[in-house]
Length: 149
View 1 (cartoon, one colour):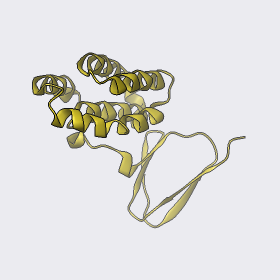
View 2 (tube, helix red, strand yellow; view 1 turned 135 degrees about the vertical axis):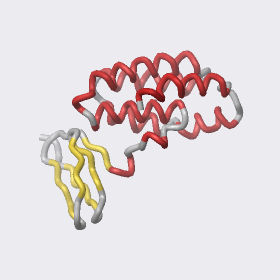
View 3 (cartoon, helix red, strand yellow; view 1 turned 120 degrees about the horizontal axis):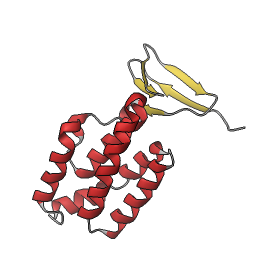
């Protein structure tokens, strides 16, 4: 049997559990006794925060988790986006990790994919700051994903 998971939340904090959004009115500890898909509020990226290609990918991957009714649509958009990113990026570390992230999502491990995407933010920021990814390409990626948000 897996061990339980205990999470503490402060008053007013939200947690996304299996597609439901819960807000607590006081400090509370939750103990998950079985497998559950959840995101803490501080890991949820709002649409306006999806300003770079990887943050846009993160936003789409999180929608797979927090919107079960739209999972098929989110997964299709994820596939389209990851394919586009694999052709745009030239950095070997990002390319290898994007392939791993794709495999994670394909095997139902979107939560792990989110952690992996967050781990690439610093590399992406460096690439964008050094203009290793042309601004026109970044804009093209934004246009592809923007209508979906």
